[in-house]
Image (cartoon, rainbow, N blue to C red; front, side, top):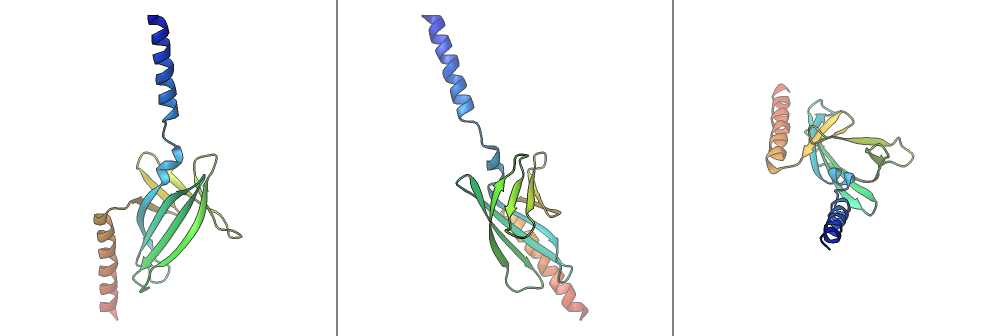
Length: 141
């Protein structure tokens, strides 16, 4: 009786443990933010990426804003997880782009830009960098 109970308890624990494992794709889900160099004026361009699950795939809302533009540019892109654990942005006839998760740093890498989980403090700091660049540039002309 006791052996049967221990065997049942072991099996139930294994089912629970393996059945509740975290989906590796979930590491991409969330709001991410980073800064890159603007194509237009060389200043800081804030990149925001909001990644949501959409069934077996993902929906990526990408927003960029620089000191050159008055309004952020926004786009929604479908994405899927590749066999090697990268997030592939499906851009149709354009080249597909990959988003890589850096396990050690807990960051994303996209087109050479490092994105970290967005917090109000990080957002404010990056926007402040843009404002200072714009003021410095305005003072030169």
